[in-house]
Image 1 (cartoon, one colour):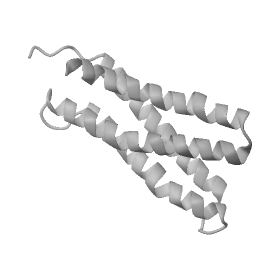
Image 2 (image 1 turned 30 degrees about the vertical axis):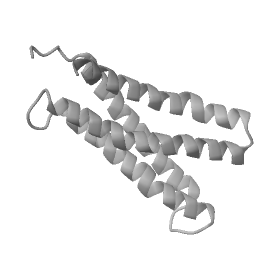
Image 3 (image 1 turned 30 degrees about the horizontal axis):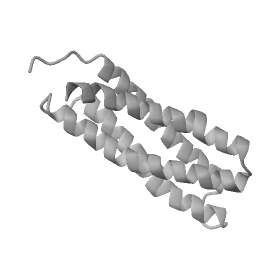
Image 4 (image 1 turned 180 degrees about the vertical axis):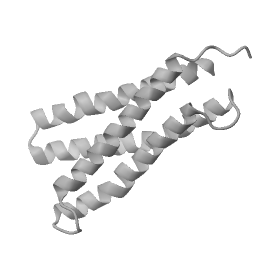
Length: 139
């Protein structure tokens, strides 16, 4: 369980960096914008569901080692909040904005979505950093 406690945040951070640094830019570099948008939307959907499962897994694993709420759990829960707000709240508004509906434009909502994804990535990187510094427990 200790190994999973250390590896899970690092793997999660790698996924987020891969999405932001490789998958999305590559799709837009190689495909027509409409096709790239579809590919990236699919990648973001997978990331969103991982963003629901992984923070809960981190919290459950962490509960085996500590009592109460600690910084690791707060980072994971912050990342969960960013996923819910950035994908499950903003993405439906983005779809409406593409059709000219809603109070905010597509560009504004896209910026909000990117901000939530960026904040989530920073939180998960901090989580991975903390996990790498965890001392093995004596149990």
